[in-house]
Length: 477
Image (cartoon, rainbow, N blue to C red; front, side, top):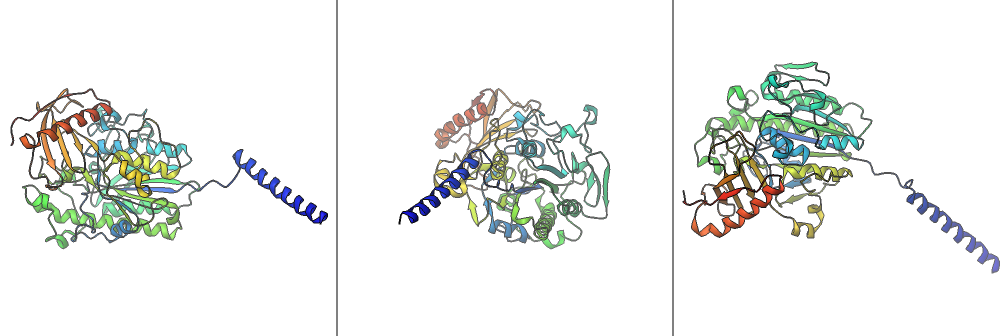
């Protein structure tokens, strides 16, 4: 019996020693293998309205995106924080407001001192790669920039593969054009639809052996209008299939360009969906799908000149609401996420998903807690700050229930901000989701307007601007 006790005691001691050694090894940081970092694909379709997915619009032909939304996370209440290309992209890449990024209107360069999504991922061992449109470098040639080639120092951390143009709408047309590689060599295409050409470049990258986890930004121009043609341009023959497609309720009530342009817009969207399907198929074929986070979004919406003299730059849902669908590690499983979030929250979310520290200077918040934490959903602020430039100098607050917008009524659009704003628009999102009845100045909403005004002032200050004076509307329009 004593011998048995000795044997068992020795065995227990040995096991304890092994366990202790394992704990010690773990404490010294040599323990279990590090979790594999996921690849990240950020697929952006320019000027895509939130309601142009088959999940909410029967006329849309988007089977690939619909399937993505059904198996992943569909963030159904996402807004951009500045509804115009360059400023919105600056918010997306830096998690700061457009007046903080330097890109408060189109054509100016991104503040190089700010941490970017691409740069932070690259510091964490990723390659950062771009294909398509950038729009975050100086655009005027007289100022040392241009619409085409982008210098390395102006690429916001995309220091690996670069096949893009600063303002793709000015260096290409739907069936011919030019982008530039990292060394300034031209890559041209002709007699091929632009969406398909950029998708070919993405497929070429994805079929190459990747030694590191990668971040790939696929930045399409469609369904944005071709500027010098004054309309979105669908693939040949596609627009004819959408001549009698659904007209969103917020458009049909107002004059604009939608009557002529919606068929092409639908056709562009179909082409983007086919492109997304190709990319997802390549991921499957290359055995990358299980390890890749795929994000589909837009930089802003499109109101087809129903709200001002162009396509966005307003506080309406048609301008600010965008799709956001995410699938892959950390985002698997069917779920609609109804909490209000902004593009300012995308970069922190992706860094958390990748296990990369979020810079303390970033203003957005990761939305990952919303996926599995009921308490996080209850405490989510559900409010977003919106800045407007170019069409007007304006500021707005968006909640699930309200849009409240103020404007510099002098008409000055040459400054990033104003000292005095006037109440301009107020919409009840529950009773009037199409935003057809402006409640600014209506006496029975005065108390709510004052509450939103004070909340907006605080958000303006939090964005780094001086607290302005906001003058109450005196008349109900």
